[in-house]
Length: 483
Image (cartoon, rainbow, N blue to C red; front, side, top):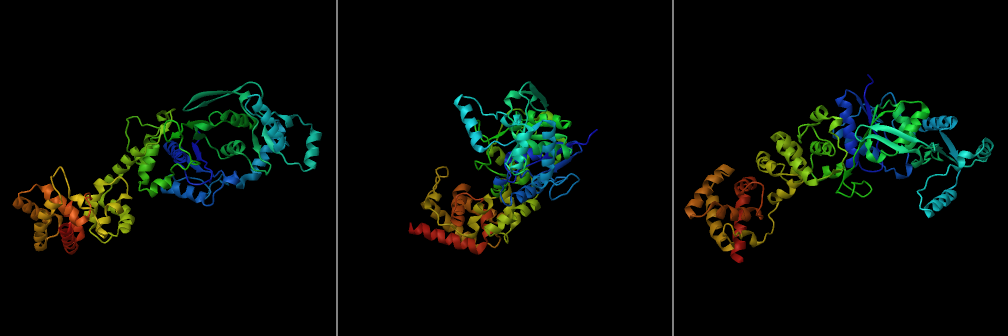
């Protein structure tokens, strides 16, 4: 049995788009599920759209997400080079083979002539296809043009009659009339290939057994198959994936600035959660399970779970899943991952065990940490309206009556752990004859400057320490007295 070999072949034209990362993930999962190889190939023949540093983004993203490729530009392998711009001579040789077999021909048409043909077609309400003008040039005419140094492209010679049919693992049998296919350019005038030629040549020479790519290639695959036929090569298995949509009518688009993997990392999403969620954009396991590690995805992945329907990218669902991952970390792992955010919040030298206890169950994204802990570094200038609560029937006047006995109590305490604070303040509530919320709500506002904090007043006081807690409490009492 032939060893399974899949490939991910992105263009280095910017960041790695979510749809592209899903293609890479499925290609990786299918290869690993079947004991095969996953290959990275860089398709950089569109020189005008190249973005400096984009290759490094691709390498780093795949490695960061755990999608380790067995062969690639920076990994080596027996079928390189793995960057298309370094394979120019290979494409030129194969283009010449196609010319000699009659499956392709040189086209010397100028841009002006092509524009005229296009205008004529559009005037008749017809879709533009090349009119095979240069297919009919004699050998003498071709030689004369070559000797004169006229620029040319190489076009595929699509049969004018008949149909081309192939089978796709997701969409079944696909039949396209040859008349609907254009004699597309295979080799540009600068000697660089188009996708039409390069993907066929590279997939064959690199031994790719299963081609996994977006559904946008579904209708053009027949012309690629005509090239396989012209070369006398076996076809790979095709697995075309439905699009990832931002809503019911719009696809996620790199050109329109839709989010990339790095965007979500920068927003505080966990890489494992991103990969897990992307796996579910067009695929479902047999038991409707939603949380998978990468190893579990390899075990569970099966082509039968792929959908024909477009997948809607739901940021709320990703956020929910991200929260599940955060809550599933051990304390040590959470602290390790949160440390950059702790440092940003200026709390890296505080009681991280306590911070983790109050933060971890409440976070959806890691980037929330600095904002939620900002009160520790600096007491905000808050509005006295924070003391008002219809539920607790509190206002600033009542708050003053609560905070003054709280100050007296907290000054006398030496145990500033949350447990020690809890026992003493709860006893005070009983003494005052007040509900817990009527005391703890104003106390939290008075020492944090906000009505919402991770954890409650006791945790905040322990994190702040006795001196800072008392300083803030006194300042808040003065603020109320001046009101």
